[in-house]
Length: 124
Image (tube, rainbow, N blue to C red; front, side, top):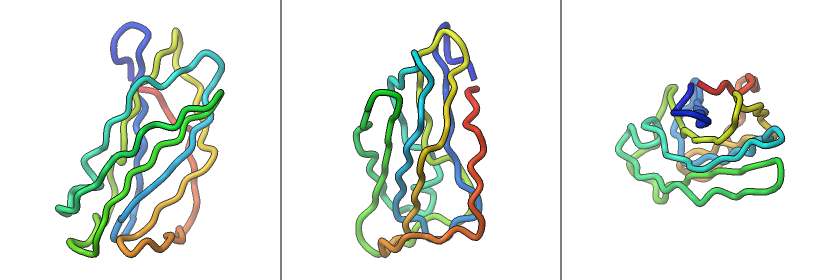
């Protein structure tokens, strides 16, 4: 969604997870697209578990973002919701693709998705 002239908000969400303990994703960016800022969504901490958003890792044409939590209690969030929101600078709606994504539970075990579906990221 437009977030002011030349700025766009990209939301990254999950559906149907259990005991979320951390996540990481890498996005491919179109030429001229730049991510300026990222904020943690409400879903990761919705169970009362504390999450830390790690600094953005920027590379030409890509950006990676991760969040983690420590300890075994309380359990991680279960269900669906917003992981993070990114603010991009682009004259037109940015072209974004998901290059990689990983979720782990509160024990640090990688979650095996029931199905893997990467929809195109939509700037709103």
